[in-house]
Image (cartoon, rainbow, N blue to C red; front, top):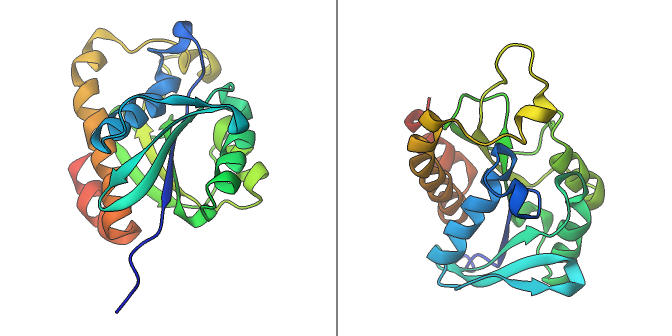
Length: 197
């Protein structure tokens, strides 16, 4: 009989502060809040040692730490490495939820490892963990219109049309993260990739 799955860490990426709260770059933070609520964890509390906001509970029958780094996106790696060490969670059991320019708005994709696609948060995490072999929930925010700089675009708020669809997309991303915890990568991909885009 196989042993029950151990603890997992889910990290939602974003930037701190109210001015960034509703921007495209912060979708990971919103998904993390949904997951913390589903895990029965209540609200986040400051975890000073890892410079993160942390909520602990159970998801899919597993002990799960849901965390949001308190640093800016491009410095996410330090807090994530700190969380991995503090809670003794192997990098393979880390799920990072982040915005993805290379997917249409609202499309959710799951993967393990691979490139960071110019995403500074992922680049920082890979560097700090010394591996890219962690799971990702990628939430599509689409490409900027015209010649708008992607660095500006990710820090803008969602359009009115996007806002109407946003809650559905965030729920889907949270469902996908739970499926990774319950079923593993391939079954979760088979279930969620046909649903969005």
